[in-house]
Each structure stands twice: as C-alpha cells, then as structure tokens.
Amino acid sequence: MRAFTLPTLLVTVLVAAAPAWAEVEIYAEQQRYVVGDARKVKVDVSFGRVQVEGTDAGDVEVDFRLTCSRQDLEKCRRRGERIRVVPRIKGESFVVYLEHTPRGRIQGIRAELRLKVPKNLPLDVDMGGGDIFVTRMLSDVVLAGGGGTIDVIAQRERVGNVNVKVVAGKVELWLSDGLMKGGGFPRSIRWQGPGAARIDVDWGTGDTRIRLE
Image 1 (cartoon, rainbow, N blue to C red):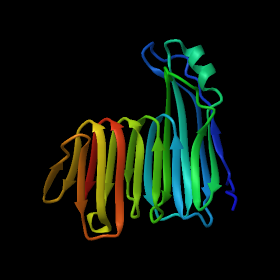
Image 2: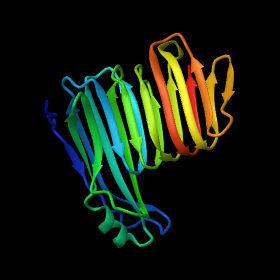
Image 3: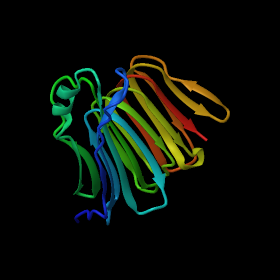
Image 4: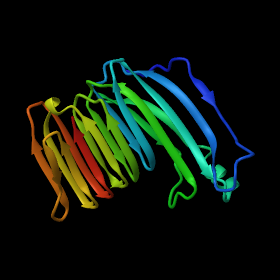
C-alpha cells in the first residue's frame, strides 16, 4: 500500500530582521497523506517536539517546521538544510520519520512536528529526545524515548491500562478524583480503567503527565 500525497503547501522563510536572541525559521511544509488500509500510525524521530491530535478525518496531516538559533546561523542552516519529513507504509503502519537528521550533537536546530491523525488508530511514537504532546486519541498510545517532557490527555472511559516507566523525572497521572504520583526507581505508575485502550510510556529522563478526563 502506498501513501499518496495530496496538494502540498511548501513555505520556506528566512527572517532577516529578527533580534539577536530569536530563532529563524529555515524551512516549513504542510502535507496531507492518505493512510489507506494502515492500522497504526507510527512517528519515528530522533529529536524535536511532536504534537499529535486525533481527528475524525481518515488522513494524516503533517505540519513540519525547522528553526535555527541566530547564533551561528549559517552552520545551523547547513546542518538542517536536508532534514525532511518522509512518510511510508511499513507493514500495517503508516510511518512518519525525519530523514537526514545530523549525527552527534544537534546544536541550535529545533524541529517541530504537528500531526492530525485518525483518532481511532493506535499511535506509536519513538523519539530520541524531545517533547511529546498527545490529545484526542481514542486508541492505544505508546511512547518511548530518551528524554524530554510528555503530556497526554485522553478520555478516562476509553482507557483500560496506564503503564508508565521513567528513569528520572516527575511522573503524574491526573484523574477526576485525584492525583497519582510515580515513585521508586525507575519511577512508575500502573492504573486500570474501564476502557480498551492502553497508554504505555517507557521514557528516559523528564517529566511525564497523563490526564484522563
């Protein structure tokens, strides 16, 4: 099964008159993909910020932006100029990943992915390091990575299991009737609910917050 790209809006912007402390957007693109018969959405990125919103649509919308610190801007641009979002069908998964990310220390480059995905499909995010925000998903949410912050908002009645394991950082599960905090090493939380979906987090360092509303 191949993913077909619908009309794409591509915008590349260089801001020349920004203050010295500001970041400069060096690349931006918006795309929509048909997922076809895919039964899961997987996001595989090495760094950045990932925001995922579940929707009623059957397509995946991707808003991708790259910014560079104005300090040493040219070097940052050279390191980031080839980074692109590449989608593919792999088995039963629709996979979104970043191609040509720099190896080693990624200094001055910020990548942001905002995705709208079918809310009834399971979501799997594998991330080297960065921040993840997930909302409005009705099926499984599985998050794994090296470090950063995690924020997940889900419907309590849809969730059957929450399993969080974090090496270091604050772990919180917010419920309408109270707050659970993770303890031990690694810090962990286990919770069972009435639904069928699961939320699994296997994380390195950073704060994790899950809110069931």
